[in-house]
Length: 577
Image 1 (cartoon, rainbow, N blue to C red):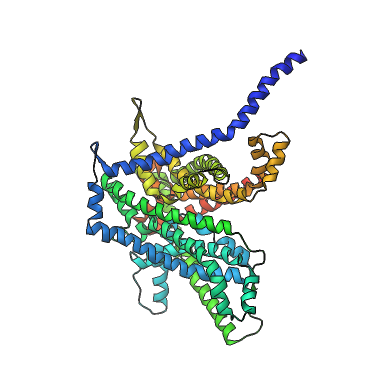
Image 2: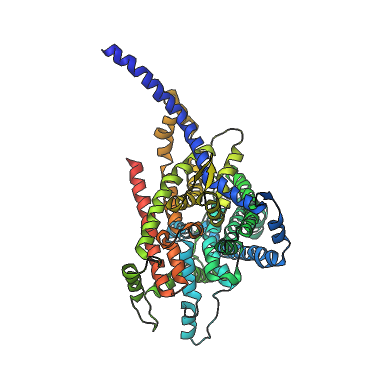
């Protein structure tokens, strides 16, 4: 009996071991198929719509756009111009922060540095609502100006408001990238320059600045990419009178002018992909450069001895702190304040009561808060299930040594450069409307289409959180596991994943926050009020009444914060089991 049992177990063990050995390859192929179906095929559909009319190849839609003064100047050039100005504003706000974090020591420094990640998990439509509450005719800014006897200003629906809002989002990105570079500068190189007679200014110019410029270029490139493809902020603060390519694509989709929408989307995508390729090249060189073993010492933000120079520096830091407070704190505080302020200026809960009344008595076509909250959480859960395995798989593929890895990295990060509007339009045309496969019409609609769009936008952030941890692992750990008989898959699950689990959890938290805040693709794919998410509900309410919109924005802020916290804490505990 025992001999028979052993003989029976041997083939089972062989099959199990074979499956383990092939599991990584199978997951990689499955990820590639999912990425093709959910991203490359839909985006290819947009490109086809731009050059095919009634089954015939044509360049007329693209030619019409590229030769039209209206499209070239009022849409494309304006998009590039606002992205350029937004990049300058982000650099102006972010570089002093990098200087503070890299060169000074002060209470709460690490906490503040960690908080620079917050704009990346804040839904953009919520930030737009905050800026509307700040810069609107009866907003916080004009109320403060009126209180001190100054005339009100009209900043809403201006380029300046868009630029400031973009700086809110992207200045922390610039600060994080440049701070990391500044902290990698070797103090011995600076000391050598000083010993050769260079004054502090000359040492900074000749030694420190050349090492910072590549990171400044990375931050500027990423900022330009993000602001070039910005949608909800421009829609809320600029409207259709200050339309960028994204806003105009949305307008054309709403008017069912798919050829024009696709042509504009193709132009935007080509520009974004080109800039993303430049970014990946920059990032690769920075990653290869490594960090310094002897970073520059930090000094106290409050000088021990006062001099005209130290006093001027302290005043400058204080003034910068005030500007940062105005840009980063006032909009969110304004949104919260507007949600509890009535028409007479007094405190009230009538806006929240309006949401409760709408939930109880609203018609099916009207915005209701509870379905929007439920949809956001449901889509976030679906995004988590799809984006995390895809992101981890891509992190593995992009950190292994093999021929063609650079191409795989670029293909994996392509969704990083393609806007949600383009992905939503591609899914709408390619999967929601349906595709014929061997005579069968296949359609992906409703929640599945929205989760697909969210997962495509979220998984690159998972990859970017996990890949650096994989690249720093010691290869000898895996070799030791393999020498003890573990398969490559078993070594991954038993050795590597536990060591990079913090990155997986951070990526998962990002995926949830990005899904909950996703607006671009959702507004294209949402089929009626029953599929609205919280960001779409905020935008719909904003078009009618600011008070209920800010109340819904506060609900969105609460749900996003709680979801991010729960995923981070639960994921961390699960990884310790």
